[in-house]
Each structure stands twice: as structure tokens, then as C-alpha cells.
Image (tube, rainbow, N blue to C red):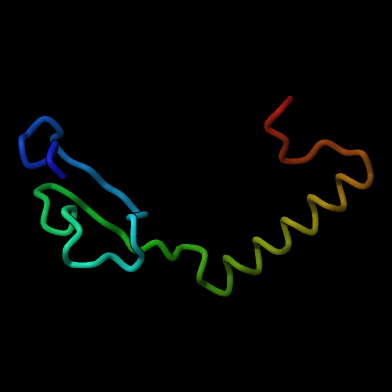
Length: 73
């Protein structure tokens, strides 16, 4: 917030803050050029369904010795 106030930082966009939901005393709440989006993209039925399907597929691939969604290769 201080960097936005001073102009050192031109703008910021965040979807996570130190306390959810954001409290009005959070300096980012009134900081200039700051966009704060709700941290709830996971909350829709479709998102949770897809997440569970992906977890299932990842476990299935792991037990079959397959490489799926790996970041360490």
C-alpha cells in the first residue's frame, strides 16, 4: 500500500489478502490503483467438480506409474 501511495508502484492486482474477507482497515482497501478480486474462484460447483476429477486422474496415473501433471521432469 505504501508503494502505491508513494507512486513507487503504479498499480497492483491481488486476489489474496492477509485476512479473508478483506477488512476495511487493510491498507490495500483504500490504496490507489489497487484491484482486489474475491478469492473464491474455487467455489463454483464446476470448479470443485473439475478439481476432484483431476485429483482422481492424478492418483490413477500415479498408481499406474504414468507421468501426469508433473512439474519435476
